Image 1 (cartoon, rainbow, N blue to C red):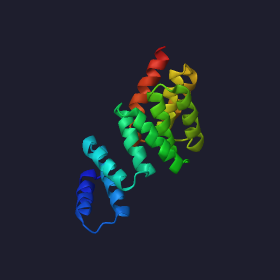
Image 2 (cartoon, helix red, strand yellow; image 1 turned 90 degrees about the vertical axis):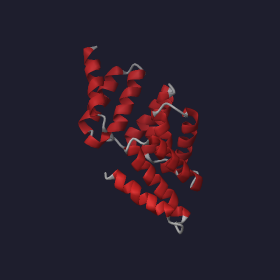
Image 3 (spheres, rainbow, N blue to C red; image 1 turned 90 degrees about the horizontal axis):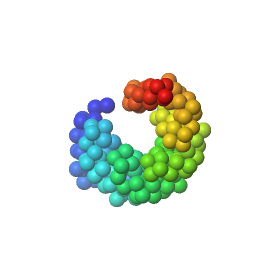
Image 4 (cartoon, one colour; image 1 turned 30 degrees about the horizontal axis):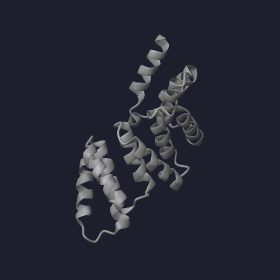
Length: 178
């Protein structure tokens, strides 16, 4: 979690002239993740786009960039297209499927979102963020008891790095308040 030091290291590597493209896209991707964790999205986005110039259909990069855009409520259509490519490249990745479902949720394509997110839970039943997302989708569909159950599970399984405990607790309090 020493993201600043990692950024410095990756920057030194990028400046090397003898780095192969196979390694260079990975460096941009990893540095982009560090920037994102440091809340420096503009730099993260730039690095993800550089990685995609080298490897245009790299599923991890497509997923990270698209999810970042979705969370910022921008580029929904482009993000969905990117995530569909990523799913084709890596159809069993619950992270990528979660992002695609979340994009559909944010676009209010709730029936698509629930179908995909339920598949995510089949693949990774203990994934707290996905359980939280499925709870949100269920709630939006009026399936409030199922939403409550998903949020309880998400809260029970959440790790500190997931950063969802507080928001899930707020949802549970609102649900219990009626």
